Length: 341
Image (cartoon, rainbow, N blue to C red):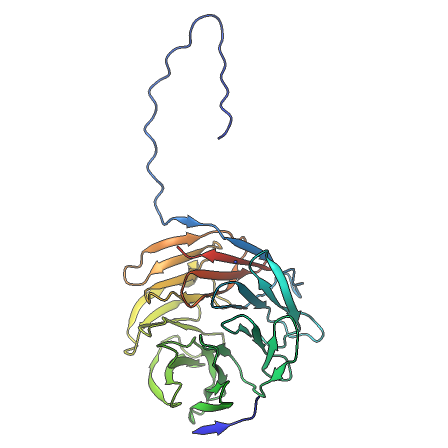
C-alpha cells in the first residue's frame, strides 16, 4: 500500500671487553623462532577523541556513518537528554571537528558526498547541512533507521513492519501487515544493489522486503526465540548472506534461511552495532571482547586480518561502500579509521 507524506579514520647493543685476551667466539646462534601464527595485525590510520562527555561510566557511541569517499565521519551516542550536544561530524584529515549538535535518537547518517547529515531530534528526522545552515524537517518518525548507499532512501521500523521513504519523491512504502503481538526491533542495511532490506521482530523472525514494491520476498526464523533485547542484522551487499546477532551470532544463506555459520557469544561484543560485511560478499568484520576487530572469511571461517588499537569495548562499526575504509567507535569515546587490508 502506498502512503504519501510531506517532507520536503634498534635497541642499543652494549659491548664490553675484559682483560687482554680476545673474546671467545660466540656460541652458534639459535635458529630464529617461527613466525607467530594468526592473521596479520593492522593499526588504525587515524584516531579521533570525540570527548563526548559520558552520562554514565562509559561513552556509548552506538551509531557511526562515513561518507562514500571515507573523508568524513559522523558519530553520536544514545543518551537522549535535553540540551546535551551528543553528535559530531569530523573530517578525517587532521582530524578536524566540523560540526556538533544535539541529537534525540541513536541515529546519524551522512549523505554519500558528506555534505549533509541526517539525524533524529525530538521533532523528527531532519536533514542538516554539515557545518550549519537551513535544516529540512522530513516529517518522519520511526524506530530503527538506515540510509541507502545512494542516499536517496531512508528505511525505518514500525510497530508491525516498517516503511521506506524516498527522499527525492517525498513519499514512501509501508512494509508489513497485521501481525498481532509482534513489533520490529531490527533493521538491516540496504543490499542487493539497494533493492532489498531486512527487518527482525521481537520473536526472532527475519523478513526480507523489496523496497520498490513494499512486499516481503521471504522470511525465516532465526531460532533466537522471543526477547526484548536488541537484535542486530547486517546483509552482505550482494544479498547472499545475512548475519544476525542477539547474543550468539548466526550467518544465514539467503533466500533459504539456512544457517552456514554459528558463533558463541563468549568472544564477541554483544551491544551496539558490530556487524559489517565487505563488498566481496564473504568477509565479515567482527568486534571481539579483546577489543580487536577480525576480518573473517565466512566460507572457510579463517581470519584474514586483525585490527588492533581499541582498549575499550567496541560499540559501533561501519565501512565505505567500496570496503576500503572502516570506522569503529569504543566505550572510551574514541573513533578509529582503518585502511582495510
